[in-house]
Length: 216
Image 1: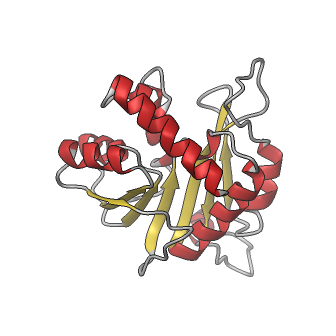
Image 2 (image 1 turned 60 degrees about the vertical axis):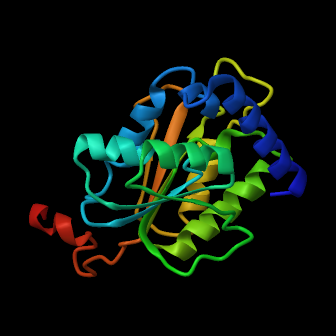
């Protein structure tokens, strides 16, 4: 991501924060659809007792959602925006929230799973390069897998400031990291989520992943 993109992102969200304060509107969500996105992202794996990185966490609302639903994981949220993180620390004192750009600053640990919601929809000078960088980063710091959601380019309308991802391109990119991939476009018509499961060891005789052996 170029420095001008970083500046633009910070300025955009700081301006929204001044207007809306703690609100989904600050993060670009006009409705409570962010809760549906959390439901989808967190539904693929058993996350209880796991370590989680929420990349681009905003206020840390994923933590609040998980607590409400009884999902007990060890949460670590990072975002480049100090104002959002400080607000999140007030809202969720039990969450570990950190201001960090992990593309520029290395982190010294890995996480079982990494999630990213809404981060890749902001229009940049080179969104596809940013998506590829993110996949590389998430693969490096995740042990078992990672999941990201996107706004699809299979739409009947567009907005100038939104980046619309091609599901087929994202799917092809995901396959570079594992053969165990899920793409979901069944919960919202113009959005999709990709899950990269790095637990891809399979039974070589039956060519089936271990938990499905009982069915063959």
